[in-house]
Image 1 (cartoon, rainbow, N blue to C red):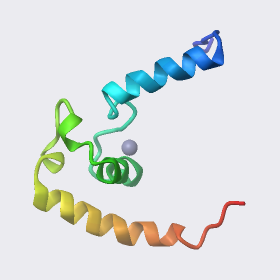
Image 2 (image 1 turned 90 degrees about the vertical axis):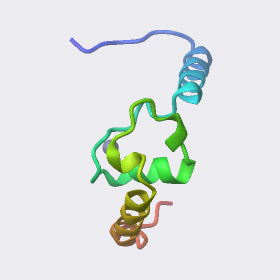
Image 3 (image 1 turned 135 degrees about the horizontal axis):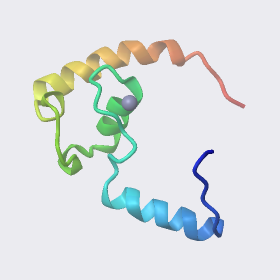
Image 4 (image 1 turned 90 degrees about the horizontal axis):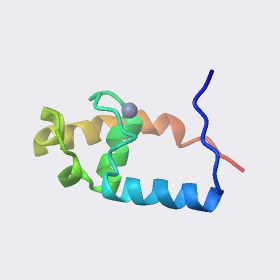
Length: 83
Ligand SMILES: [Zn+2]
């Protein structure tokens, strides 16, 4: 019942990569409290590429405040180590 995609891995990866290069916000949500999406926007500096930015994505003071809060939220993950 799930959607499937069958193709050559290289072609699929290339297609997905070019689609995300055109619009890197495709797989990001627009919830202000989403740590991962807000940090991806900030670290990749893709604010100019967001087609319909929310109020917190076009207000530099709110963007800085969100980054400040997320910095505290991310500290709980700094002790994790993946090997
Ligand atoms: Zn998200």
